[in-house]
Image 1 (cartoon, rainbow, N blue to C red):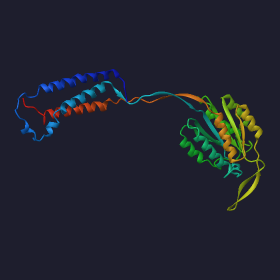
Image 2: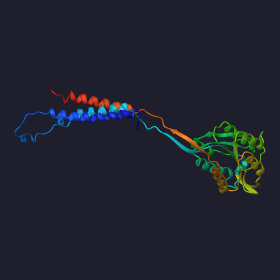
Image 3: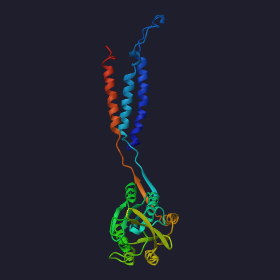
Image 4: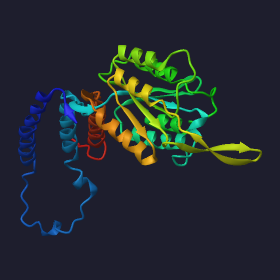
Length: 327
């Protein structure tokens, strides 16, 4: 609680002479009739009026105090606070082609990517983060947002088969760029995760990288998958048969994309390696931002004014009822 007009609080000092005046006035107003012996009145029971004798004065004193507080304008706490946080804008471009169901990462590449992405999001509470998905086509799963609970729910719902199959790396980058190009953030980043080679889309990966560079966007590329062969679940009738398929990641293109945009290329051959990649990106992308936090003022004088009114009203009722004096 703060006061907008603190100088009015000095008026509280005037209550001291008022209290002194009341005490002196009370002593002078006492009867001067002398009684030789007061023992006869020693056991006379006191009524409630004896205890309420000074209540009107106390109520008036409280009302005056409250009125002075009203003049001082009490307000809820109002703070301007400069703080330093770390925040950037990040779009996560995730490959959802059917090859992401390969189980060289556990339980498969896509689920491993989702788990690590969720941990990454939880570790960046001050960032605007969004997700774009790509296979043969691309679409935005979640635009840039600071509502990470919504983002995590949408991350959990990512699955393969929702768009045409294939690997349109260039389209994935371009879609992420459209979400970041108008951002005013000091640092803008795309984290691209794929397990294949670009074979679909109208925009080549390197062209998309040049577009990202023109908007000051860094691209970190991640190639996910073991070296050699990977077990892939293939449906046969009502059963699942596993076949070994070659891991074909276009590391040369992914490295060029990262290099053109001042990013880095990483290879994740296991769950632990994938986690390490995101931890490394987390360390690289830290931007200090000065933030001014403001809490809005709220006038609180109404409650003090109401309390003062009730004190005055109660004093009037007491003086004109049970404590009424006969002239």
